[in-house]
Length: 142
Image (cartoon, rainbow, N blue to C red; front, side):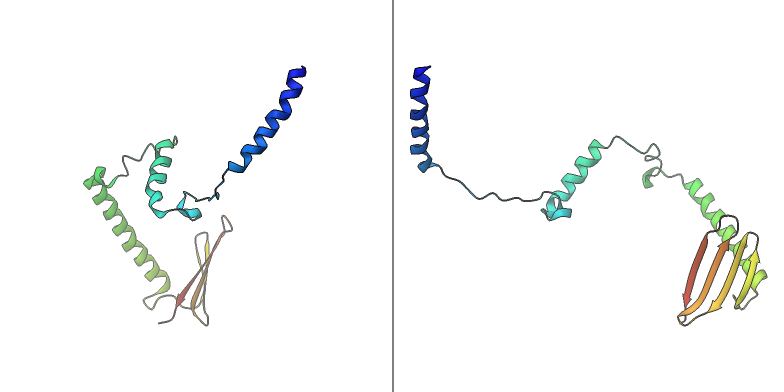
């Protein structure tokens, strides 16, 4: 025990003598993520790293690839869109006439449509009575 008591001040003195030779450097923080000011070249590496760790894969991902699309299915969807567009044009023409939307209130099914003219253009407010949702569209003047 006596040896330990005598050796402790010697170790302390030795540490004080050696402290003069200790050197330090400035610490510099550099962010890795480009979103937080890091190097922009890290973006691809960070994204590939995140995708490799992603455990929630989309089961339909392979079918949504543009290389795995079925041309017949695409043709059928395109044809359906064209038919529905033509049908909607005919319905709008039958409801509103050839000149288009005139200011006023219209009721079509569960929808109440209010058309009015404003300073910036034609305002169309659509109310879905079933859900209570409102949609507002402004068509600017030419």
